[in-house]
Image 1 (cartoon, rainbow, N blue to C red):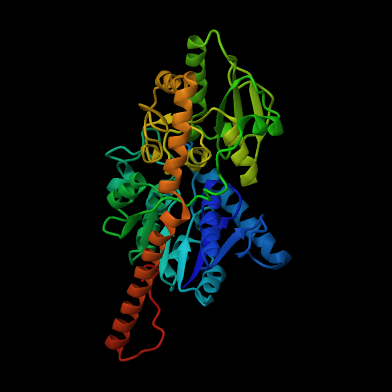
Image 2 (tube, rainbow, N blue to C red; image 1 turned 120 degrees about the horizontal axis):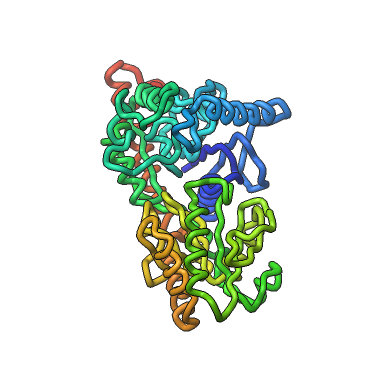
Length: 443
């Protein structure tokens, strides 16, 4: 079986890393896998991108133009990143269709990677791994999970948020998707929570949806000797280290940096003596300013190497993931695989990652004081901390190793290929032809 993965990039953000890891895991097990991206930054085997100087410049221009268009046109009353996927991409679609792949696995293809219309015109069997909510929403990537959320009801004219005065780009984008994606595609969601959202959405209701977690290189994210990792990373040996991180770091409101700050203030009220606490922030540009006045902060910046990232998890005492909505946060799965307990909120896919009081703690959304209590509980007792660390590692091996994840992907691929062949044969019988009959993306 030949698999062609398609994504916007191979390094920028969690979705890119998830696509690369799935591609690498397939190569490691002998599968024929290729990853096609608009913006290539790594030297990973089997990653392809537009060739030549012109191709690279056009890919960069698409990304910049798409981001600028979304920024200029979206309603200021509706914050958050948006993708219109408006720019035509027939050459990109044709390259995918000309490939010798048996199945195409789309990943994060927003940000003008492909137009909505060209996604719907793909002729290969398609499996689409969702890394956020964009595919079944309008233009937004993260939306409310309320019972009356627009992605559930179908983006009516009368259900916009109060104060919205600009053109309703979310509704316009959603209607373009509904018109272009006429045949159901097989949808993979890394969390059961996101899978339920897709099943309940007005756009994908009735489509085949499969909850399959992101694969993780558990042989790379392993527990290591803490003192040695701290010495190598220049972190203090005699402190309790609390790690926070996100692509974009402190700038993305959904990542809950403000909730972390509130939790640290609450933690400071409880922690007036004993071992000093130090915050470690990864993924944000270092400003050398404290996260909060309560505790000193080490700013690590972007870490592009998984080996260094694994050492960071092994060096700290707890990883905090205070996001408001998460799919299956890789920072949490990476930390657990490295033997580092995780604290976060009981929201989105987090309960599928962290077993409360077994390998970390979960607080009610979005109770910063309860989050602080969870952090304190994790680090208070060294014996308990060791038990949490051991349970964290075991959970990673049981849930996210390649041996657990890949067979589930292969099953979905095989069903997509078989369904395409069945439709192809049926079309040939109906027309009296047995030639190559074009079909939509879901066939």
